[in-house]
Length: 216
Image 1 (cartoon, helix red, strand yellow):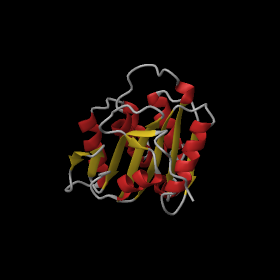
Image 2 (tube, one colour):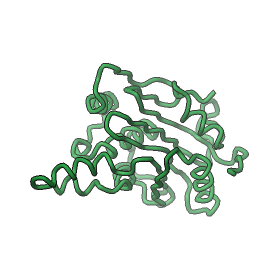
Image 3 (cartoon, one colour):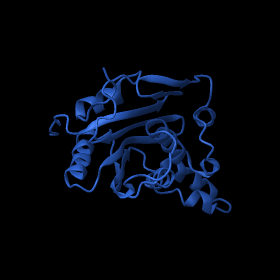
Image 4 (spheres, rainbow, N blue to C red):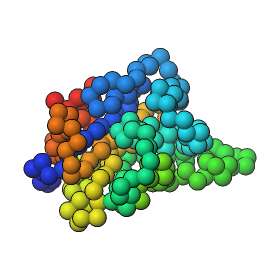
């Protein structure tokens, strides 16, 4: 069982994308129920204002993860104070199956190397790290359900070891028209006395499961 943390670490920001809705913290950022998944991801990219052309060349798992990271972290603002203390820890259910299926279809003719390079789920952690300058721990786990208790303990261990000071962690999964990205920016510093909440499995679960992205 996961042990609850006693306010030593804080969820300072969070983001949730699913069912053609995107939330930044508790506030809805974009809602476009009439669009397809691909159309919604492009609409969200433009609403965020990323201006990152490489995004359009990524697979859909990386596109989704990048958008959620941008909502949770904000746009990169220059060099991080401690890039080697900044970690990315993600999980999902379907690995890179959404991209794998596309690659298998291409085997009937000539497969694209640009698709093949995304046939690993942890590529999204690398893309996020490049974009935001993270050079610390990177991990990607596969599970049928979001392994909240395991991941909370894992991230806590990273902090307790003393080498990690901030961590982006959560769930990024897509297969066909079904997708969900829920990310949390966690650190040992309470950045906002009003909106930061203790980093506990209960608070992580509540944001992940709540239909409207609420934490209270």
